[in-house]
Length: 107
Image (tube, one colour):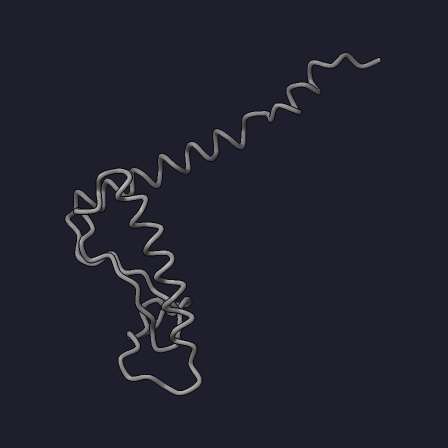
């Protein structure tokens, strides 16, 4: 049973020659470390004690949040939504050069 991205493929417990497990795991570790730093900056590291890197049977990196409380999942969803809303606001706002261009009279 695998989704189109291979995320629900089995973990790589029995290794197959030629599959780049280390590359996938290293990518997952970088992602997990980045997420861990952000969670720590928000004081939320204790809400995600099972955060870890892994690889599946295809060598794709996976970041596991582990078992988390429903409140932690809801908070993470709120943080993602807030970040997306802020990003959309930033994209909609004119850049300084666009503002300068608008204020310049056309001759």
